[in-house]
Length: 502
Image (cartoon, rainbow, N blue to C red; front, side):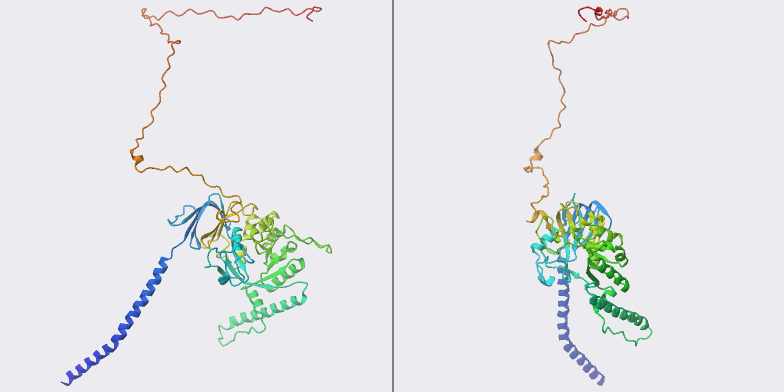
């Protein structure tokens, strides 16, 4: 009896416990269902986002890697390059652009710009995707530009995916005209170098002794330290020979690669700049005569870019102005960057190097060579399609593809559509067809025409007499006609001396 009573009490306790837990189960179930519904809705939204396919068919592709593909195709998927070459399988919903007879280049990169994005603040909040300056820059082949400390894509018509990254440049000065500044910069590099040496020693020792403390950065300039570590690039503004030589030796002393803007007399110290691993941002059309106070060579040279490149200096081309200007037929603004590169070619720079000075070299300086600068599978689909050699001053950009979208069409814009418009393909006139009409037509094969002889009563055919059977012998032969002898004129005696015919 006691056992039955304990069993009943145990069952009652379990029943009461189940009643207490039931509400929690009932509340937990809807929460789990809600989470499942939210995940399902997010997956449905992702599936609903349409993929964008753009196919450029039949263009002459200059990849920027040394390869040239004539009549090739480029398939862009969303904002990346999906395929390049021939016999590409194109999706049915892809936007196809026939560019047969046109040339395809990587988008140009401007290392410095002003006013292209419609504002001067943060690109994410101040960009104007319908700015006229942006339109004209895209018409000039620019697809990516640096404004302030930000790298932006000229993504016309959209405010998404404008910011590509941050530029890591540090402005430095090392000029003979400022000896105090030169001393200060050397002291900063000395302190940074001392810290890096101590830090490397600590890295090796801390593996065996975990209690060692990291060296302090007291008195160490952060920008000088970043330049020596390679996370930032030191940019110098210098033109004269002495300053360029001093910068090259400073870079060799502390082991960093300088970036030099201007570099007008770099052709005089190209060997030293090449040993320092320098990169020169040059204005190929810049002209400065040598100072009359100097005996040594000096001034600018149209061969500056070519000489620098021959000595191992990377060359990037920049126009005289980073803004948009409508002055002159061929201006000095950012719209005419290819003309600057063409002047470098006139001075002896190879054409492929001149194109690289506007594409892959700026991408390398910005740390974006894995995304920009060349036409390769997996890189950003930033392309320009031109009607000729990009280095020719008469060449126009016909289309621009930025982020996998066609954002510029010359024929659809107001500024340049009237200048040498593209030829319109002539199509056969459309003939209306009545349904069922062709089914009722009977198409007969054309009959061969036979020529019927025309009878002329005046020229009746003469019947030959039938052969006579004369003992097996044929008809007698016709008598031979005597040969016709042409008449011979009598000989004429020569005139005698003294005659009247003399």
